[in-house]
Length: 257
Image (cartoon, rainbow, N blue to C red; front, side, top):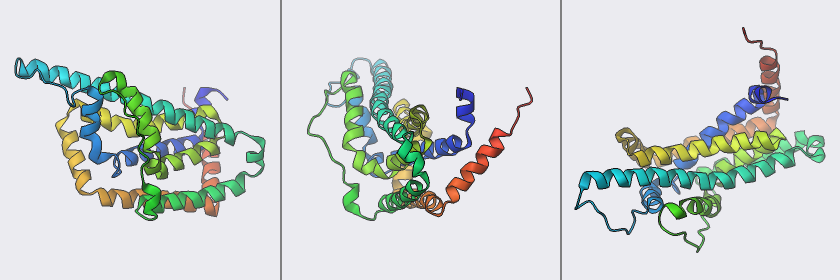
């Protein structure tokens, strides 16, 4: 199967949309959204550093903004490397013979897990939402930004578990490490792009973040309901029917050119 056929696969298209949305929901979660200013200051090296604004305020502001954007990019690359590796392993597991033999049963069990993850995201089983913060702290600044991204991916994994866990299960269902890598990349785009936009300091982005901070509980409920719906589709077998129909429709489509 070439890359065009892979991308056009109905199952992958739906999973890709879910992965992108899951990344955005992760960014809006209580364990990430309130900490954005601190992350950006840390990865740019601004935190605790003497400012040159007194000498030339405009030039200093431009320099700090550039460092913040670059730091955010490096931070995102750091956690992207971890998540891509983890989800590629899930995809490799899904390609194994035993998985193919038991795919229907495993899919229904996965559905139950996704339902539980949805409940966790909504606030149930609060112990499962604890973050495991590592004692190791990378150096402040651009040099430590990628490493901080790695620490973020590992240390915040329990809190991000409901969303990244769902994407991991979808990656396993793909039965392909390359397809799993695509899902991981889309998840990281959903999670990382808001970091970068916030670093640019767009006014509308600041207002948007303030809005979601005020309505963080609603975000959790909506995100949890979406996960529960996906889980129910898996448990009942409707998910497989939808995926099969999509593959038939998309596979039978012929482009005009």
